[in-house]
Image 1 (cartoon, rainbow, N blue to C red):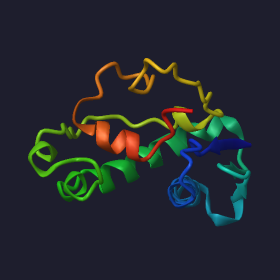
Image 2 (image 1 turned 180 degrees about the vertical axis):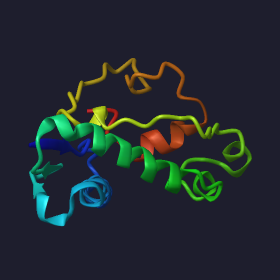
Image 3 (image 1 turned 30 degrees about the horizontal axis):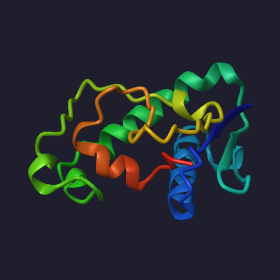
Length: 141
């Protein structure tokens, strides 16, 4: 059984969209009979009823869907928090690899100190997407 979790952003509509997107990957890979979405109150758990050694198929489908949907130059221009002049500078490459690893475990919601004004995500440089990052996730407690 493969279990994926939404990131608990604090925005119920965004959580539902992420859960649906994760479920779509499972449905396109293994069929809808094997996929279930569970509301956990603040986040969703997407369960795909297959053996864990089949996760390679899931990752392959995730990459295919991401490339198909995210290759559009329209997306940065319609994403909240990304200005029109910086939307063209966001790199999109054909060989970019997307991973489901961020969804395979519950995220640790660390509390920021008062002196910290930016999140502690993996990327050290936030760059042009600071507006989007702060508008769609919970960065301060």
